[in-house]
Length: 197
Ligand SMILES: Cc1cc2nc3c(=O)[nH]c(=O)nc-3n(C[C@H](O)[C@H](O)[C@H](O)COP(=O)(O)O)c2cc1C
Image 1 (tube, protein in one colour):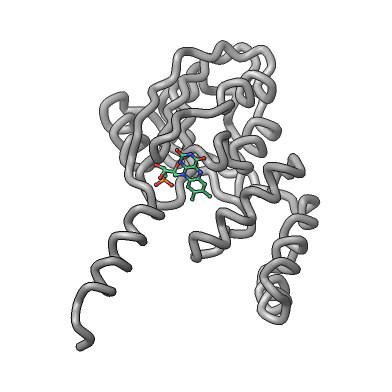
Image 2 (tube, helix red, strand yellow; image 1 turned 45 degrees about the vertical axis):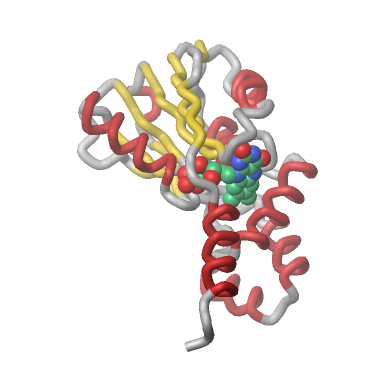
């Protein structure tokens, strides 16, 4: 899909209609991307919205001298938190796997894949299902690292098992991290309690 056409069409649509349009764009092909400086047999693949998962991913990259790849949907999620929650809920309920911006071209060269993501709607975010669907991890070791806002990893591990047949999935690293919603609430309370400028 032509990106400019997509943006202009979206601007003319209501938010729910734009979501359905995005949901219908699954045929969009991802480009294969050679991971920059590929040299390790370990890959750190991660998806993030607000950056918590990236902190862990980059630490793994540095400490293990691993290669790193950010999993990104071809159509970015909305900047608005509530709109993203709603879109994620629709995509989860429909089992939608959004097309990715890029794929790892040389996935066969990795023995171990560290796979990081935040919990969305008590499960793995849709782009993680897309990543697993479009990369063959059979015979590889998968080491999940998961951040959540206080409600735990949900059913994300069974999603990984179902979407990565033949992979050996090791026990995950699971960590509670900041939630955008909590930050938004605190900022709004601060603004409400302070006198107008
Ligand atoms: C769309 C959306 C849905 C979320 N759903 C959950 C949830 O079901 N349970 C939970 O504990 N946290 C949930 N969170 C909070 C994130 O999992 C948590 O803040 C995570 O650390 C964010 O990681 P990131 O900064 O890498 O994006 C949700 C966040 C978003 C944006």
